[in-house]
Length: 105
Image: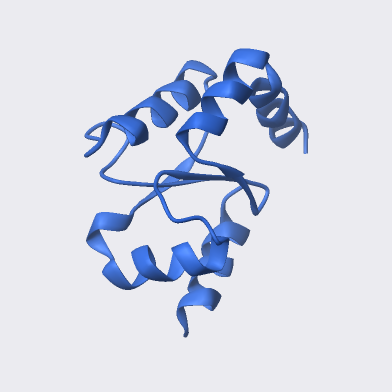
């Protein structure tokens, strides 16, 4: 299975997926910690992938998403963005709405 197929499979299996450095309980960077923390504050069920454990995925995802940095937050298979965008959406209430739409589906 090539890297793009693996990514599509992961995105298809999880309505909310965070590609991050480390894990939600033990993040390996501040930006990953912030996004995981916001999702937790919204009581979001989400999956995560530690990109530090998979160098092929780490590089392949940058090309797949055309997004060079981590974390990368996906909702319903679509890239929402990284930490800065997630913070803006959280503060405006839009992230909460997006999560509620996933719960309702």
